Structures are given as C-alpha cells and as structure tokens.
Length: 388
Image 1 (cartoon, rainbow, N blue to C red):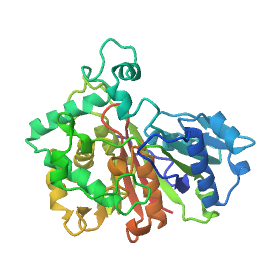
Image 2: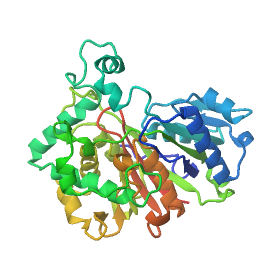
Image 3: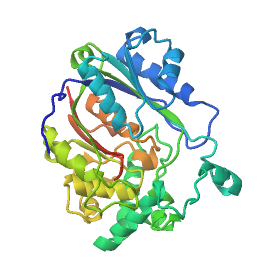
Image 4: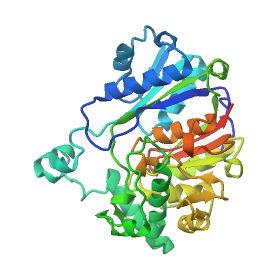
C-alpha cells in the first residue's frame, strides 16, 4: 500500500455540533434538523453564513441548505453517499485543493414514514418500502440481511459464542449513560442481551443500530483559519475509503477479504500513528458483528478473538471495555445506543474528545483518535485525527 499522503495535517475540523437524537418519528423535517446543527456549529466557530464557501452533505441537497441558511455564495458543493467518511474525504480534498476555504459539512439522520414498526407490520406498506424487485427481504441476502449471514459465518468459523456480540452492545450502552444526546441510556446486562427479541439469526434487537431523527454538522477548513477560531483545531492525519473487487453481500470471498482489510492496510501506511498511540477508538457498530471485525482487522487482537479481547480489557466498575485500562471504545454510545448516524456521531465525538469538549465522557489528555467506519462492502472507511 502506498504511504503517499500530501493531505496530512493540511486540513482541519474546526468544530462539530449536534441536535441530539430521537428514536421516533417527529414533526421536524431533515432540513429543519440540518439547519439547527449547522447554525450551532457556525456559532461554535464564531463565523457567519457569508464565511461559508463550500457545502457537503447527502440530504437535504446543498441548494436547499444554502437557501435555508442564507449563504450568499459558494464555490464548491458535493452530495456524497453515506457513511460520513465519504463526506470528510470530499470536504478535505476540496479545502486542500483550494476549491473551497471553509466547508459546512452536514448529515441528517431521518427515520422517514416507512421506517416504523407499524409500517413493517402492515404487509402493503412493507412491500412498498422494499421496492418493486421480485425477490423481497428477508429472502434476499442484499442490504442489511447480508450481515446476519456473515455474522453466522463468523460464529461458525471461529467457534465464538453470541455473548461476544453482547459485549459490544453492553459497552455501547454503558458509555451512552454519560451522553445526553443518546436515545438509549438505560444500562443493560448480558441476560438482557440474550433475552432480546431475535430479528434475524444470529442478530437480535440489541445487535442492530437504532433509527433516529437528528443531525450533525462540522466546519472543515485550513489549519491556519481554524486556529483563529475559538476551539483547538482537529487535524486530519489520514483518510481512506476501502473497497475490493467483490463487494456484494453474496459475492464476498470470505472474512479475510473485504473493504475493512483495504482500509486498515492503507490507513496504517498513510497515518503517522497507529493503535499503540491512540487515545480513543471508534469502530463502526451498525451491527455488533462489525465492531468485532474492525477490532480484529485493525490489529488489536487476532481474528476471531474480538470477544476475548473485550473480556480481557473489561472494566467491571463501569461495565465497559477500556483498552489497557485507558482507551474507551465508542465513548458516546455509538450507533447501538446514541443512534444510527451513519458515522457522523463517531466523528463528532472524536472531534469533541480531541477538543476537550466531551463533558463527563472526556478522556484526559486525548490527542489522537482512530475511527473505522462502515462495513465490508462499498462502505468501509477509516480516519485518523490528531489535536492541532
């Protein structure tokens, strides 16, 4: 893998802000939520709408956001797909190349009318939500159904008990207790996990992220400009978007050949630090299985040993994992307890930790963060951040 990385430390995240999240359909629109988060992050930076010359977000459109916020002129905009690593990469490239100087990056998580238990229990609304393809879920392995299949393969291949997945869910929930933005803050036990309703074997309700309404926003700019703003800049050390030639759920070659492997190899080559120097770690957790996979592929432990690694580093007093008694894993509660933000929550929490803005969750002296986002297929991503 090439270690070439001319972008290193040349782009900064000046601030991050959030609306907080609700695990229910609300009367608010994605535009409303996005506007709130964007206004908040601009206030954190002490800038106005006229200072923004770049926009990056998947929904609502940049034209809608620009009009809503009254941003008079922009020279660049992009609408990347989720997870949020695509947005960070696009905005960082725009700033580094000079296409824009100050990018407002936003992401709204929104449940939509079809994404409710009531609609899924209605056979007519369920069919409409799944589209017009001849093979409908759960008979197809496409989309989210693919991960339970690969989770089953993982349990079989490494002879791992489901309790390994449960440790991921418990860790997230214990961390979320200290996060006022999180939608799930009630502690859970392993018995709670094992008794939770099975959704698709071997993944239960507590193995899956929580659909929410809410939004996050970020200011991406040059380090020089960020240093003129109130908060310490967070520098982008490296970013990678990884993909292999076989990135469909039913075509994956195996658990040792997918996008996560690409991300880890490239990110380690491009970054100036790795896991021995990390202060806080953010593995993606749309499904608990993905978190174990990221932990193993990143090099914290061998393949199949993610559950044993969490047990080895478990802090009984706080009922969560602390690597080497100091490094938390998803201290905000992640997708499983804060809410399914498609990675924006992971990046926002990393920024807050490195700026010393994480409140009761703050890791003392945090300077370096490792974020591994997404799953196996088209959406594996990695980011390393360092306090400027």
